[in-house]
Structures are given as C-alpha cells and as structure tokens.
Amino acid sequence: MKTRIVIAMVLIMVLSLVACKKKVEQVPSEELVEQVITFAPLPSFKEVYVALDQVQVKDISAAVPAKIYKTKQEEVRNAFSLGLLTADAVLAAKGRNKTKLSEISASMMNLTSLLALESEVNRLGDQMKKMIENEQWEELDKALDFHKGDVEGKLWENENFDNYTLMLLGGWIEAANRVAWLINQNYNAERTTVLAQKGTFNSLVLNMQQIKTPHIVEQEAFVESLKLLKEVKAIIDSDQNRTYTKDQLKEIIAKTDEIKAAFQK
Image (cartoon, rainbow, N blue to C red; front, side, top):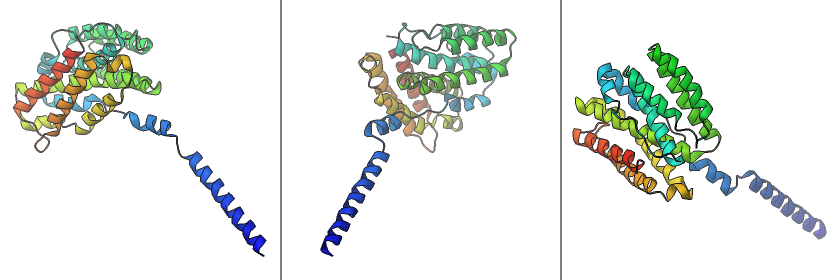
C-alpha cells in the first residue's frame, strides 16, 4: 500500500514538472518579447493636416518651405529627410503648388540609395510627373498617401525599425512645424487642437530611445534631436483643453526648426 502511494506521488511530481516545462516553452523568450514591445507603429502625420481644411489654398501654398530641405547623403539623414519631404509634398499638393511639388518629388528620388526603397520611390516619381503636369491634385494626394504607407510598410516589414522611426520623425516634425506656422499667421485657439497629438509624440520619443545602433545614436544630430523632441513633447503635453497659446505655437515652431537644423549639420 505504501509503495503504491509513493509511486503515485512520484507520478504526480513528474506530470507536474512536464506541465510546467510545457508552460515555460509556450512563454515567448525575453528577446522575442523585447522585439515585440520595443518599437510602436505610428499614425500618419496627415492627422495634423486636418487643419488645412479650414485654410485657403493660396495660404497652404505659402506654407511650403521656400527652399527644398537638403542634408548630406547618409542613412540617418536620408530617412529623416524622406519623411520630411513627404510631408512637404503633401502640403504642396494641397496648396496646388506645381513648381514646388516638382522640385520636392525630384529630391525624394535622390534620397533612397541607402534605404533600399528605389523601386517604390521611382514608381511613384513616374506617376507623379504625369499627375503634376495634368494638375490632378486629388489623385496626387492619394498617390502620396499610398506611397507613404508603402514605404513605411516595407521598412516595418523588413524590421528596419531605426529608419522607420527616423522617417516618421521627419514627417511628424515637419507637419507640426508647418501647421503651427499656418495657424500662427491667423491665430485661432480652436484650430490648435490638431496639434494635441500626445500619444504620437510619446511613441516617437519611446521609439527614438529604443534605437541602439551605434552609428546612429553616437551622432550629434540624433542626440540633439532626441533632446529637442522631448521638449516638443513637453509643450504638446501642456495643453489647455487640447488648445495651445500663441506663445506655445512659437515654441513648437522654434523647437521643430531646431530638429530640422540638427540633421543638416
């Protein structure tokens, strides 16, 4: 009898160990969990451009930067610049600015050698040339939106999270900068609500902090832009019922200008 009890107890212990082992095997490794939670997918900067619906076309056109944004050719700056110029291209399309849109699209073609995105951008370039010539503004807006999603999707799919984050950073910084500038020309507190993108700027900061690649994080441009991004986030977080004062708009414009300048050094 005692022997049977002992055997039964041993069997229970063995079965328990097996069950525990299976549970452990089903739990993702720490490395896999870290990869999953490290980088957050980011929404489109076009959420900020909702404010443009209340602005006349000629005023939107005036918000397109006079000079095309340029940096030296290297991966970090290429990714940031591509995002920034995509935001400018959308702005130029909404402002029916044919000349600027042609110049911006040409610059976008030159930014892809280090990003392995030549086919996507070149394909868009051929389409855009025809659309620009024919002034197909609505089609251009859709084409740019598709292109933006296509490029971001490919970077994410290829697990190129560093360049994904830098490209989105460029897009969001430029969109916030230009919209803040536009609203500041004819200030209206209610219009500033489009800048209350707390979740996005929080994710941008977190994503930037997760970049560990030495040749990126050791660059002065990266260090400076992360510091400034946190300052922009602090302004975004200090809203009053999702609105911002004229002084806060000026701060957003100044800080985002500094981020753009950091990548041009």
